[in-house]
Image (tube, rainbow, N blue to C red; front, side, top):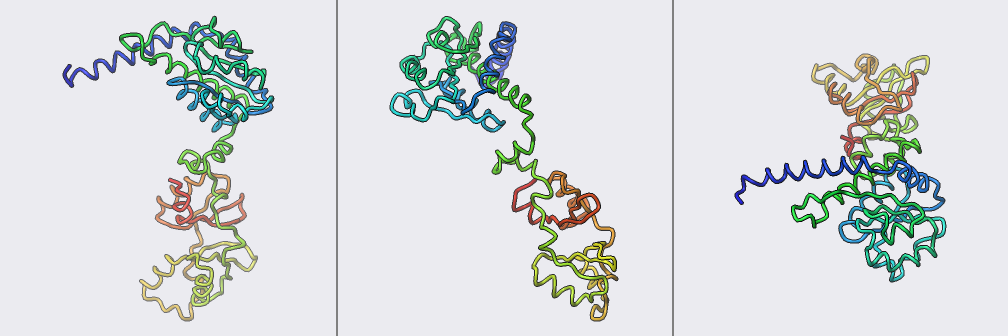
Amino acid sequence: MTTNNFFIHAKKTFKDEISSINHSLDCLSKKDFNSICNNIKNLKGKLVLMGVGKSGHIAAKISSTLSSTGTPSFFINPSEASHGDLGAISKSDGILIISNSGETDEIVFILSGLIKKTKNILSITGNKESSIAKKSLVHLEAKVDKEACPNNLAPTTSTSFMLILGDAISIALLKNNRFSPKEFAENHPGGKLGKRFLLAKDLMIDIKEIPIVKENTSILEAIKVITQFGLGFCLVKNSKQTINAIFTDGDLRRTLNKKIDIRNLSISKVMTKSFKSIEHNKNAYLAREIMSKNKIYSLVVKNQKKVIGVIRMHELNESRVF
């Protein structure tokens, strides 16, 4: 086979899997799918995923997706379960077994032990008459007519279908539980996806930690205050004690470039009155967009009309919000 033939076989694999999965979806039991979801939703404890070989990899991925979308879950290798890991399972937990044949030796061997631990045994297999299916409280048959493998041997279509079902269960539960973007972010503090849901108020410097000076403060005095706080800016309040401007090191550089004598100049002459701002409940990545567009490095954060803090490019970079 020449290298030019690879993509031909790839396209056939795509088409074969999609065709088989569509056929399997038409045969999928709505009642059993809903029963699986309802049982998981009503668990008092966690959901334990089990599988061996390729099905084990799929089960581990499903478990990870469930946990990140609001359904606490973890994966246990059935071989390790028979050597003590069954102790991690409690009566309030549920077990979801993934097995194409439904006759996986390592799981069949521990079925009686699993049932002693919890009655909430759920399974997804390709055979409703299998040992695992018959021992389950709820079983969902996920049968495929053929694998994409030309020898109909290597798990391909069957694992893809199991994976899609796992995603479907996860999203169905997410929707039912009204799992919010904020909760998703809390479960992904180290991931780029989670950071997309951080809010401006989560990263801002609170107003209590920001230097604030009066409009009649001299520039020299303002520089001293800014230096003490080390933030590179200060906010400015008017005679009504309302914050109406910001003075940054950028404002200072622009003033010096104009060769203006700053020794007896008040900050009101050079401060930025029409400062850019963002609402506290807006996504933090929008703050980066505003700063980049306007070529600034500090952005005032408001709660309606009240200034409650400032978010800088420094905080966004440190938190890796892009």
